[in-house]
Length: 266
Image (cartoon, rainbow, N blue to C red; front, side):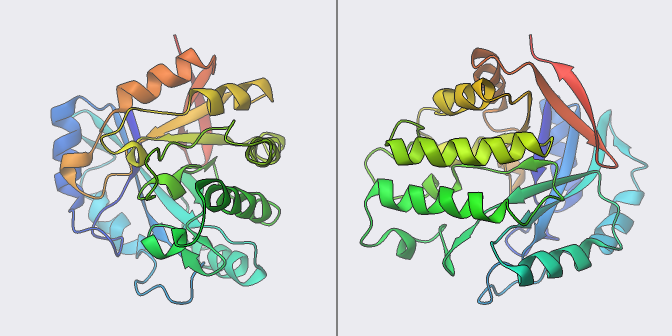
């Protein structure tokens, strides 16, 4: 079991110490963990600084790459945006850091963070989700220095609709946006993440989306809990694995110095 989306106190929205996350990983039997703290230049109104990756590296050096049989990888989650400024600032910030793994994520649409209720005000579910997916597609026209596309369903995490689930058949426009996204990701040789955080306590979703990804030629995924607290680490990862298997995805990947190793999904 791997968890390739984990935040610590080096992210502005987490208080968790790396040691706390590693203790939880060892207790849960997680084989490999990748710390993916935030580097965000997508929103001028953002009030937290990008992760101090050098300081985190010094913190993790004490563990020598392994903690009680848990392999440690040093990654980052970057926020994408369809703008030259975000691209250039992110690229420059990462220039001095040699990550194992980079998640490329969309958090903001037209200057509004989709995490907050304000984004959904006055929008139907289809309108809100379509704008999010179209922004991902536009961002992928600029960003190419990532390992996997992060949480395609982040917009659903705190959505106010009775059924929050993100599905490819919500409308022809939604499906078309997914096709555009997946064709871009696949053409770049990248994968997508199955992120369990958006499900919260609801039934899982995503089988139809993953099947579409596979139909278009997608070959691998990563699994991430998006944990910001140690109690969330590893949450529902077995369900993510089952989804990938049921969708016919042949591999999941682990990374070292941006190079993937592919592991067959039984």
